[in-house]
Amino acid sequence: MLKTLEDLISLIRERKISKSENSYTYKLLKDKNLNLSKVKEEIAELIEAVEKDTNKVHEAADVMYHLMVYLEANNVKIEDVMSELKKRRK
Image (cartoon, rainbow, N blue to C red; front, side, top):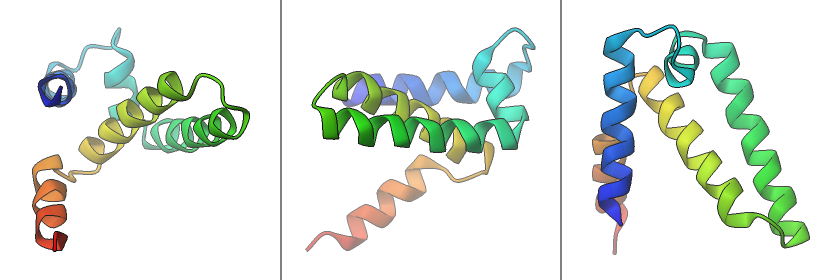
């Protein structure tokens, strides 16, 4: 299960390096305003899906993808986030 998340992070990092203009991920990485608006949009869609009890998993996946791209675009490493979460564990 976590392998899927690791693969996603690797793909995002590859797209960041490749600079492929045809890649949606690269477009998000390059355009911080687009990236931020997509994160906000996807979070709103997830909230609506939870409230209406529809498409929750689909919308949660969208949020996770866009959040991972947002973090990577802003040089926030998921490894650092995981370390912080580990520190908070009681």
